[in-house]
Structure formats: C-alpha cells, structure tokens
Image (cartoon, rainbow over all chains, first blue to last red; front, top):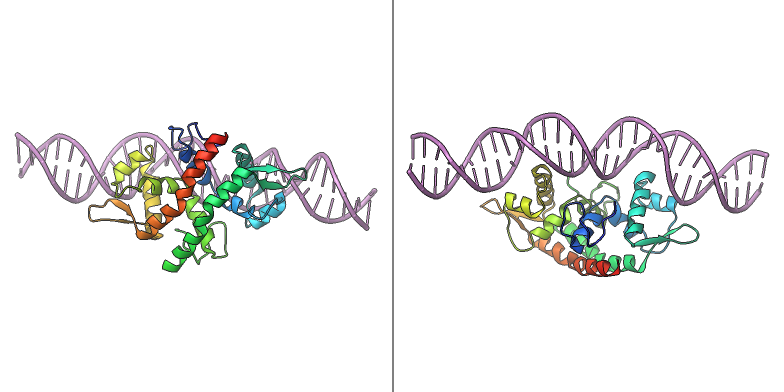
Length: 107
Length: 107
DNA sequence: TCTCCCTGCTACGGTTTTGGTAGCGAACGA
DNA sequence: TCGTTCGCTACCAAAACCGTAGCAGGGAGA
C-alpha cells in the first residue's frame, strides 16, 4: 500500500503529509529512481540498468507506488516520467546534492 | 555498515556522495529521527515514543549509523542531538515539508 | 542500606521487505 | 519465420525490521 497524505502510513497514524513523505521516501530505491528520471522519460530496462541493476521485482513495485502517489506516469511508449508534482519534489530535493558534497568534504 | 561518501554503498559502487545520501536516507526511520531531533537533544526512550513506538532495536541501529555518519552525537547525559552537519542536512530537507503540503493539496 | 523506579540499551525469534534468477507474451526488424 | 528486445511477473531466498522481554546502571526516598 502506497503512502498517501491525509491517511495513516507506516510509522504514523496522524495523517500529516510530512509523515507520508517520510514513509514513501524512506523506502529503498525511491530517491534513486526519482533522481534517475531527472532528465526525462526512461524505459523499464534502461531505468533498471541506471539503478545499478536493481531487481525488476522491486523496481516495478516502486514504480507502482510512485504512480499511485501521483509522482510519475507512463507515456504511450510505456516510458516512465515525472509528473509536475514529481518535478516539484525533485526541486525540493535539490539541496540534498549540495549537502552531500559538504558531507563528503567533512569526512 | 554505515554509508559513507567516497565509498561503495548499497545500490552504488561509484562512491558519489549523493549515492551515500540515498542509501542512508532510504533506510526506514532515518528521515523521521532527524525530524524529531529538530528542537534539541532527546533521550532514547523519549525519542522512541516520539517515533510512534519504533522498536528499540531499530532505533539503536539507526542512531549508531547516524553517529557513524557524523550527523548526530551524544551529550554527557546520553541524549541524542544533531551535529552541525546534521543541522545542515535538516535545513537541506526543509523544502520537503512544504512540498508534502502541496502533495496533500493535490490529492 | 535497601527498595523502587526510571534510564539507555540488548537478546531473541517471528514477520515483512527486499533481492536474484528465470522466463513469459508482445512488438519489431530481417 | 526467426531472432532480438521490451515491459513485466512468478518464484523462492536473503536481509531488514519489529515486538517483547529483560538486563545493568543511576538517582530518590525510607
């Protein structure tokens, strides 16, 4: 079951949107998949390779969850792409990259 | 094993800092724990309650990982608190809350 | 000093999530 | 028609996570 804001999710019954985000983004590969879609639509097998050969089982599960959450969709060629909301999330996660560089510098 | 930038991590051999971040933040409860530490040091059991009664096993594992990553530390009273780097990450994640509100509005 | 309680944390075993491999049906080109 | 590629699913094993119980240590009170 996909986490949706306004409803109870894994780890919180409150329904607070941020908790749904924590549940969704705290699943393996979700951040990575969003990241790999940053430059436009990608097909299933290509996406799988870009994600270091993630198993197709998990990839398909995650794609389904992200679709149910409204962050990605499939075009007529069945390629996976970010929705407007997904692109919005990507922008929100942008500072993460800069932070990771600082993290790297400090270690 | 804690993900550290510059080294291979779960899901990527490249050593790119962003991949280490994806590995770390993609683990259950990590985002939530950072979130719950936003207002200052919190003791183990209090933190456990704030995180909807997360099991102590996982909580302790996560705290260890976050400590090894340099994002949190323990003061003399054994309370857990963000380091400067941890606070930096928190700022980087700030846009996520606003995004989750927009997500909520669109659903 | 002897309880009583509260703290941080660990042991252990069951459940859930994630992963690896194989392969199906459809579409396309030769 | 044959071969190749694509999106995806079935199946089972490994790893992660959870729930409960409980230990050791410290402080307050009698």
